[in-house]
Amino acid sequence: MDSARSWFKKFHPKKDKMSSNKETDNMKDLYKPPVDEAPSNSTKQKVAAAKHYIENHYKAQMKNLQDRKERRWVLERKLADADVSEEEQINLLKYFERKETEYMRIQRHKMGVDDFELLTIIGRGAFGEVRLCREKTTGHVYAMKKLKKSEMLRRGQVEHVKAERNLLAEVDSACIVKLYCSFQDQEFLYLIMEYLPGGDMMTLLMRKDTLTEDEARFYVGQTVLAIESIHKHNYIHRDIKPDNLLLDRYGHMKLSDFGLCKPLDCSSFPNLSENDYGVGKDIKPTLDSDKHSNMPSAPRRTQQEQLLHWQKNRRMLAYSTVGTPDYIAPEVLLKKGYGMECDWWSLGAIMYEMLVGYPPFYSEEPMSTCRKIVNWRTHLKFPEEAKLSAEAKDLISRLLCNVAHRLGTKGAHEIKVSILQLSQVSIDPLYW
Image (cartoon, rainbow, N blue to C red):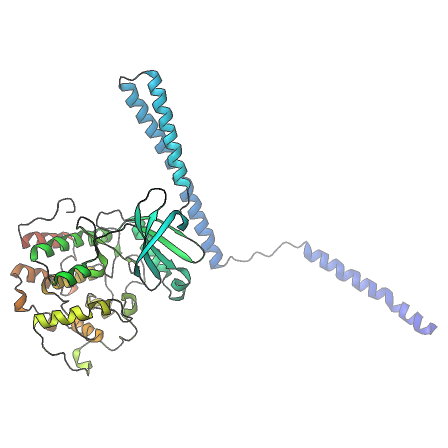
C-alpha cells in the first residue's frame, strides 16, 4: 500500500505541472490579437446601406436648414420693403416661425397604417391588394397598395417592387400616378398612391366597344407623354396595356402599375422570361414560325364576331394565371434583347384596340397570340368594317413593325408629330 502511495506521489507533481502549463497556454490564447477576417458580402451591403442612409439624412437636414434661412430672409426683405410697422413685422415673423416648427414636426412624423382609415378593396394581385383609404388627419382619400413581403421573397419579385417604388419617387409627371409615401411593418409593404376614380381604359373599351379617332388621338397622346416621362429617367415600363391606363376625375389618363419597370442600366434586362410579363409557365413552345404549331388556325371571323368573342373573354384573360400577351413586342417574346422601343409597340397595339375593338393579334390561345406577334407581317390586318382613316392605319403600322423602323426609336417627338398630322384637333396643351 505504501509503495503504491509513493508511486502515485512520484507522478502527481508532473500532472500538476502539465495542468498549469495548459492553463498558461489558454491564458496566452485569450490575449492573442484576433485574426482579421474579410467581411462577408452581406456585411458589406449593410455597411453601404447604412453609409448611404446617413449621408442622405444629413444632406437633407442641411438643405432643409438652408431652405428655412432663405425663406426667412425673403420674408424679412418683403416686410422691410412694405409699409408695415415694426410690431406687425415681429408678429408676422413669430407666426412664420410657428408655421415652420409645425411643418418640421409633420416632416418628422413617421407614417403608418394606423394613420389611415381603411375603406373598400378595389383590386387584388399576386402579392396583396389595393384598397381605398382615408387619412385620419386630413380626410384625403388615397389608394393603398398593400404587398405581402413573404410572397414577394418567395417569388423573387423584390427587385421589381424596389424598381416600382424608386420610379414613382423619382419621376414627377402629371401623366403617371403619384406616390405620396411608403412605409412597412413586419408583414407588409405599403404604398400610398393617388386615387383615380375614373376607372381604367379596359373598362372604358368594354363599355364603348370602340372609340372615335378623335377620342383615340386624345388618349394615345396622353399615353405617349406618360411613356416619355419614364423613358427620360431611363426606365422601360414593359407592361403597357389598357388595364394600366387609369382615368382621373376629369377624364385625363395616367399610367400606373410599374411593377415590371426596369432601369436601362441593369445588365439583366435583355434576358427576360415570359413570366416577367405575366405570361404563365404554360407558354413555352418555340415561337420562330407558325409551322411549329400543330394547332388548327382559328376560323375567320368578321369584326363584330371577333369583338364579341374578345369582350366575352377579356376579364377572364386579364386575371388568369396565364395572362394575355396581346401587347408584348416580338423582340421580347424572342428574347433577343430589347430596349425602350418595346413600349411603343404596346402603344400601337392599344391604339388598334381602341379603333377596332380588339387587339391586333388576338387569338383564343395565348400561345397562338405569341406566334401571331412574332409573325406580325402575316397577321397584321385592318378589317374593312372598322373604316379606319389612312393616317390612323399608317401610324399603327409604323408602331407595329421592326425595331429599326418603329416610331419612337429616336424619341417620342416622332410619334407626337404623327399624332398631330392625324388631325387638326390638338391635344390638351396642359399635357402636351
